Amino acid sequence: MIRLARLLPTTAALSLVGCVLASEGDVHPHDDHEPEVTSTVQLAAGTTVYDASQTTCTTTSVKGLSEQIVAQMNCNQKNMMAVVPKRPNITFGSAVFPFMQAAASNALVKALDANPSKSMTVNSMYRTVAQQYLLYLWGQQKKCGIGLAASPGNSNHETGLAIDTSQYSTWQSALQSQGFKWFGSADAVHFDYVGSGTTNLKGKGVLAFQQLWNLNNPNDKIGEDGDYGPQTEARLKKAPAAGFAKGSTCAQEPVEPDTDGDGVVDSKDNCPTVKNADQKDTDGDGQGDACDTDLDGDGVPNAQDNCPGLANPDQADSNDDGVGDACDADADGDGVPDGSDNCPDIVNSDQADLDGDGVGDACDHDRDGDGVPNDVDVCPDVMDPWQLDADGDGVGDACDGAAGGEAGQAGAAGKPGGQTTALSSSGSEGGCAIRGDGPGGWLALLAALGLLGAARRARSARAPGRPGSGA
Image 1 (tube, helix red, strand yellow):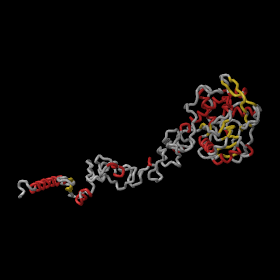
Image 2: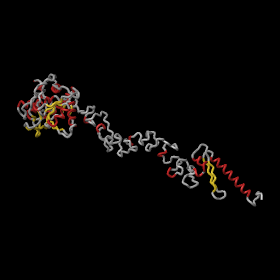
Image 3: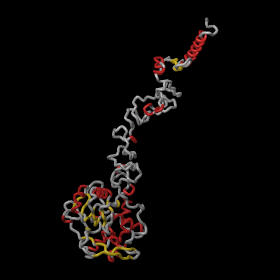
Image 4: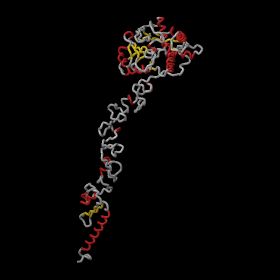
C-alpha cells in the first residue's frame, strides 16, 4: 500500500498548474492554482496513473513513476536534471517536485544565498509528463479545484526552468538578476529561467516515459519519438503510479546540484557557493578555506589575523611588521632569514658568534663558551674557565687591564703575540702574584720564576753575618 496525501479542493493555494509553453509573441495564459495537501490516504499496490487521477487530488500519487522518468532523462543526457539543494530561506510546498535543470538550480541558489534575510515558498517547480497528465485531466473534469491546465508535454513546468512562488514581489528583482524572467501580472507567481547553460527539454520527459514503458512491456512497444499522442497517453494511463518494476536503463540517480560549478556536488562541497575544486580545509572544520572566515581555526578572523593560514592565537609579532612570528620568514626583522639566523628572535644583523657554537652572541647565555654563564662570568667575552680576579675588582684577570699594566691589556685584548708576566709585591718578602697568558705566556711565567729564584739567592748572599756576604 502507498500512503498518499488527500487534498482539499480549493483554489486558495498559490501554486500554478499548467503554465502553457508559449512561443515568442504568444500570450501566457493565467492558470488555476493547485490544491493543498490536508490529509493522507492509502493507495492499493498496482494503482495505475489513471486510478490515481480518480481517487486522489495530489501529484505526489505518481511520485514513484515521476522519479523513474527523471532518472531516465538523466540517462539520455547526463546532468539533464538536478535536485534543488536545501537552503534555510526556501520552503517547498508538499506537492512540489524539487528538480530543475542544473543551470536554473544554480541560479536559484545564488539568488537565495544573496538574500539570506528573505524567505521563499515554492508552490510549483518541475512536473513530469505523468504529473502534468493528472492536472490536465482534473482541469478537463473540473475537479480538485483545477479549472485550467496545459496538456501533457506542453507546460513550462516540464522544461525544468519554471518556478512559482507566492512571494513573487519580494523575489522579482533577485531572481531577474540571476537570469529569471517574470511573466508579469497575467501570471504573477511564475518565473522562467532564460539564462545560459540550459537544454530544450521539449518532449524529453515524454521520451523517457516511452523508453520505460517499452523496457517493461516488450510485447506492447510504442514509438520512442518524444511526441505525446494517443498511444503514449493510453500507456501512461495504464502505467503503475508507484513506478515500473524495471527502472531507468542506466540506473542513474538524479544529478546532485553543483551550485558553484567547481566539479564538487553541493552535498560534498565544503564551500558550495564558492569555487574550490581542491576542497582545501586548513583547520579541518568542514568549511573550506575559500569560504572560511577563520581558515586556520585560531579564533582570530582572517581579516585581523597576522597569520591567516597558520594558527597563532597569541598573534605574537616581534618586529611589529604586521606579519606574525608564526609565519614571518624573518621574525626579528634583522634582515637575516629565520632559517639561517643564529638568533631568530633577537635582532643581530652582524650574526656575531664569539665561541662559534652556532648561537649568536645576542642570544647566547655563554657567549665565550667557557662554561660560565654571562651574568656571573668575570670575563664574559674572554674564555676564562678559572675566573681568576687578583685585584678583586669583579673583572677577571683575563680581561682586566689594571691587573698587568699595558702588557696585561695587550694580552687581554688578544693582540697577536701578546703575553704578560706580572710580578706584584704583596707587602712581604717573597710575596708576589705571577700571571701568564697569551701565546708563550707559560714560557714567560717559567722565566719569571727563574729570575725570582736568582734574586732571592742574591739577597741571601748579601745578608750580614752570613757566609759569602763579604763582611
